[in-house]
Image (tube, rainbow, N blue to C red):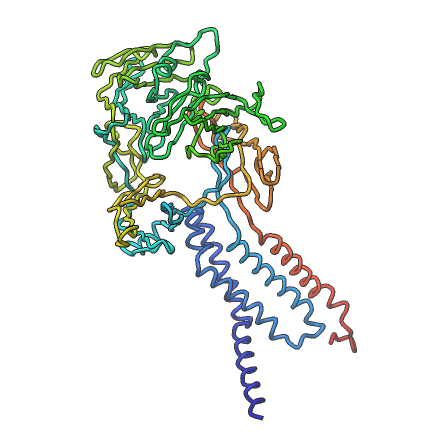
Length: 624
């Protein structure tokens, strides 16, 4: 008797709960609130940004709680009809459809992914960029970690030690600046290893032009520190490893042949900070010694339009540019490594067909940014440091102009373009790049007076400190406070431990690479306002051996493995520069569930309003 009373009491509590959460009054209230939220979020997204709308509304915890309450209301409304009768069929089916839609929405929100791909013509990408900022850390011998670093999440973590897994290390954010930048200063490092840097001016009275720039051959925090692009002109600083290489870099081109820029093989050696840049068109019979490796490197072949046919790499004239270089590394004890590097696929493992297991531990990249196929009319100005540490220059134009000679520091010299002149103000044979952090109250370019391209634009920055356990004593050692600008890639060290740290947008890999072959746009007559734009792309899935070529444009996306790729936008670039197309990439695994829920809900409505009135038995003209 007592057990029955307890069961009825529990049943009464359950039914009371269901009546409260499944009431029509609560349902009307939730629907009204949902309408207000959707209207507000639509305007908020228009006036602010999609990223902020996602962060504060659609992906926020409170919105999850609201949708859970809505699903609970629907579920309880169904339970209150128990025991079910035939006349409840339409009602139950309709509400079941609503629950399925809520389930599909939850799957999309928590298992789906949406981001962007920025593609330059000729480039391929195999990951998408999301809107959240993160600090990524790769600790030597202790794993990789990713720490959320959005402004709103960072403010609550300032000064709080964040444990990095089981490594015994931890990270502390000390300060955050939404608008900051770094000014480049170059000093003499006093090291034995060569690392040239120049501070120079370029002027033209005819063009009303006067700019100053700084080039550093190697800067750990800026992989492009040896290059400065200014409109159609490109300035570079190179370091010749041999007299033969210096001669090739400074030689006068053959006027009978079309102008072709030289791609560079960039070699990163273990234990050496600065990479080695070797012209891919170097003499194949002239090996280059690799410092500290007791080995030499020889270029075997260069392919401007590489293509794989029958497991063999060939050069296909007339095909889309696909620069590749084949080279070998030979040790003095006779060991040989064979490598192939592709400019468009930097993630590709260069080591092939070597039974020695990659003893050199080198990492290679092919920098083909100078290829004439990727640029329009332009002028190239290159400083070259020779083996004697003297600074020389070579200036070329698209129309065949060529000037070269030795740099006379402090003197104005002809650059070879119209009346352009250049002057080297400072030259450092063994330089070190140092940065000074500046904080801004509003976005503006730093160091406008100097026009230094190596100074950074105002952007977010974080000051952080890493603590490691000493391998010998176990005591915590610190890197000291370090500022990290957004997009910066740094290597921090403390004792014998090093950490590779990057402050960037969160990225996620996708099971394919997407390459932009061509981007086109049309304009409204008489304006520069785009009326339409489209992209020809190549999707490549190596694991499945799939290659798909397709044109993506408005309302015509590319679908593959649950991912939908839309043409989103594009980036305005200078005339003659490679076009940049932006794609929205989304994977929504709950979409089919939502479609199923919609079908079920419509079926329930049809049952409720059309089938039920004609199928119900009647007695005396009244439906029972």
